[in-house]
Each structure stands twice: as C-alpha cells, then as structure tokens.
Length: 74
Image (cartoon, rainbow, N blue to C red; front, side, top):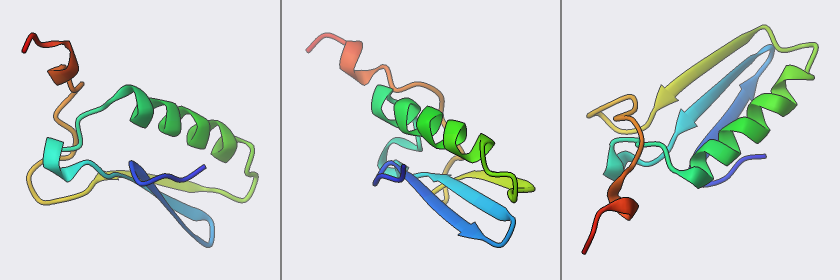
C-alpha cells in the first residue's frame, strides 16, 4: 500500500498521507496516482480511521499539479 512516492503514517485513528516527490514539487504522476487510489481505497475500509491528513513533502509546494514533463518533446 505504501511506496516511496506516497508515505503512509498511521497513529491511532489518524492517517497522514504524504506526497513524496519534492524534487518535482510533489507533482502527480501515473504511479503516484495509482498508489494514492489504492491507499485511499484500503483506508476507506478501515472503520477505526477518523482523520485523514494529506500533505506534500519538502518546503516549496503541497502539489504543483500533474507532471507533464514525460509528454514534452526532447
């Protein structure tokens, strides 16, 4: 459920998800979106979870949007 792109930390009835691509200002990628979907789907089935915190790693941005670099020529 957790990968290097999405960090998952559970404490009691709180879960913190951290987008972990600080070098890209936490821009979304297909792999990160897949990890996020799988993780949220699993967490939705957790009856003990009451709080979900979504944050970005690094100090520059929460999430800069979708990473379009792979679609650019060159």
